[in-house]
Length: 350
Image 1: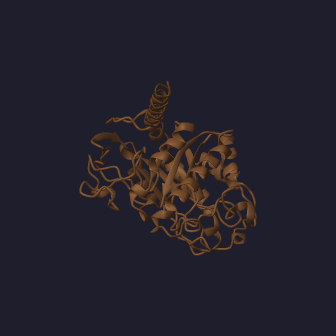
Image 2 (image 1 turned 180 degrees about the horizontal axis):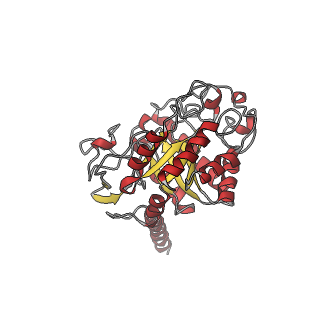
Image 3 (image 1 turned 135 degrees about the horizontal axis):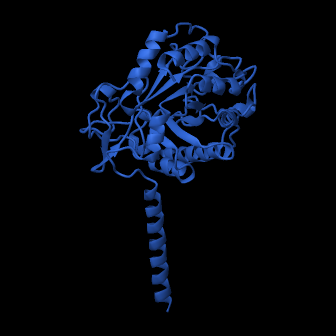
């Protein structure tokens, strides 16, 4: 009798595990050479705003190493309403907010770190404020999250630290969704910094499944998405060098990234993983001036003619443009950003 009960227990465990695995696989992309429903929604959004804002804003630096004092983040205000209203007025369909850059500083009150707005010179939960503004103006919410975290996991060479840091990331992604879920849907998660470790050291499947289980419409992408046939983890593979059938470096994911590069003519759309073919559009992310984050020396802006040409190239062939406009130390978009965006709207007839 004991042997029968033991056998039944083993069968139940195997069946439950198998069902769990099948359930997870159901969240993965379905092989196809055409865009699926949610990819079509992303393609139709077509045009959005990147919002780089964080501790770097206060140091005239693009990347910091996680050691800048948390108190140095001290915006005099957070005018998220102005950011999102500007995007809406400019004809944009969504925004992508930097929630945590490579420095590890979080724009929300995270219970998993002290390096966040709750311990800074301005405790506003920026993620929540932007989500509320997106809901108010009926514009899509996207979130950027850096895989590379120089404050929490600076020693990327030590693989023994991966498990703890991977759990930290999953916990934070769930936090971000906990904040935004009652307010609005997330249309995109934009991940960065993956090239610092071998691709198989990142919990890509776990990240994808965590997001899709809660936000099935959300499109997930990791910067420098495509590898080479002879080396699927090769970095970088520029748009001009990508060919149909090249391997997907970070699988599963929904679209391709490689900032700040634009797609070329005859942009390929079908890429492979494990012998199967998947449709993946390209999303371009480009600065309206010269820098990603606000910088007191960043005073050279692209001309309207340059921006029109950029828009036309980036949004052709069912691809997407995200134009970066960094808020300043007063927590507002610069006047010239606003003026250029509104003028550009007239030229591209949105």
